[in-house]
Each structure stands twice: as structure tokens, then as C-alpha cells.
Image 1 (spheres, rainbow, N blue to C red):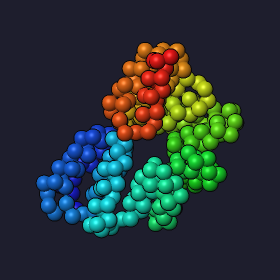
Image 2: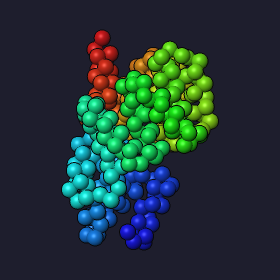
Image 3: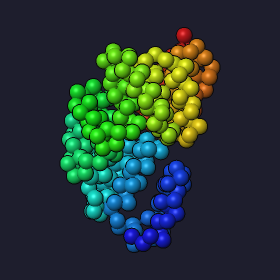
Image 4: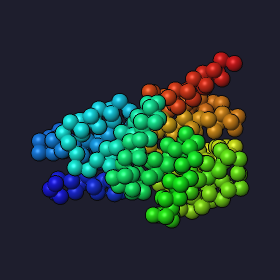
Length: 258
């Protein structure tokens, strides 16, 4: 890979301009034929489709293209494919793909993706995975957040609050604060959840539809129906195919009809 062709792309990623980076990556693939046959670049595209647009269909299509062309690094493929399978309801096959990604490369990124899905399934293996993440990266904010989410689900409010305070000290990105907002919501702390989600929005968390749906739920819980409806409508505009977004928007319509 010629460094000059990707300097701009990596610079944009480094400063967090992910939509601009994705647009540049697509331009490189479309207009520089020497790169259009590199399967690994389509894995990058699949990752962007999930993180920016939450588009499972397009992500899957990019992964299919990656396999068709061949990939030098298969661990990212298995990690992203596993996530797509899991989101599409094929949980066991998705988790098997995640396990394969970790066999090939037990990186913090691959472990964290596996841990998130295990936590969402209330799988006891999640604790072991998050402990492995912390062994590799003791200051990993996502590990503290998800250990807090697991604790909240188990009814251990004290541990959950301890984890969220640790996570707040370590977090820097919009994605981190969005997950902290989720933890506060799990604990029934809806004003703290709202404040944290709004901070995530200011920091540029994506995809916007999912974030706005979460913000809408907090406004509903706090009794501000008007603002909640506004955010629910915005959520549907950004990610109309997301199941969570559709669920929150539908609940908004039901509330309006009561």
C-alpha cells in the first residue's frame, strides 16, 4: 500500500472525522483500480457502515466482496461478520465467528466486540472476556462500562456505580459516553443518562439514530413528551431500519395516541 494514497484517510481517522475518512476510502476504491481488488479495504468499509450508518445489509455486502477478493487479515473479517450475524438474530453462529477472530488475534478490539455481545446475551463468559481486556488494557473504559452493565443486570447497584465512576474518568469518545448513558439508564438514573447521552452527541457519537432514540427514552421517562417525540422522529430519519429505533418511534406513536 502506497503511503501517499492513504495519508489523508489515516489523518481523518486520527482526528475522528470518520464520515470524511469513509468518503475518502470509497473514493480511493472507486477511482484507483489498484486498490479496488484489495479485500481488506472492503472490511474497513463494512466497519464504517456499521459504526456510522448501522446498515447491516451494506456491511454484509462489503464482507461478501472482501471474501470474494481474498483478505490478508482474517481476524477483522470474522469479528465484523460475527457482529452482523448476531445482529441478524443468528447469535450462536455470530459468537462462533467472534471466537474465531480471537483465536487469530486476541486484540482488545476483538475481545471487546465479543464481550459486548456476550453481555447483551447475559452470557456468564462475558466476565472472563472483560477481565482479559483489562489485563491487556487496565484503563479500558468499555470494559468498566460493561462490567457495570453486567452488575446492574445482576442487581449489584453498588458495583455498577463504582464501574460507571471509573469509566467516566477514563472515557474520551462519544461512543464511550453513549455506553455510560446506557449504564445510567439501566440504573434508573434518567437525568444522568440524558446528560451523558447529550455529551456523547456533542462529541460526535454515531450512529445518530440509535443515540437519538436513547435520548428520546430519557425525555419520556423525565416527563418531557414533546422533546422525546422530537428526538424519536430524528432517530427514525437517521436510521429507519434499525430495530431499536423503530421500537422507540412506535412507542412514541402509542404514547401520542393515548
